[in-house]
Image (tube, rainbow, N blue to C red; front, side, top):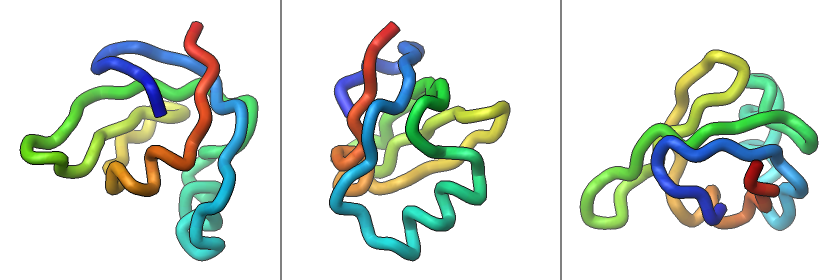
Length: 72
């Protein structure tokens, strides 16, 4: 994911992610074509906070790197 804090984009592709985590994200509405916004990055390579469909959630940077985003 190549977004800066506060920037938004739409999810192009989610590839190579653990199926269980992918299912949890899908339950939150995170899937291809959905708009997503980067709210913040944790210090020391910590988790990043994302907003999707009005919900905030945090995921590890490793998993976030598997989400391809088209910046709008």
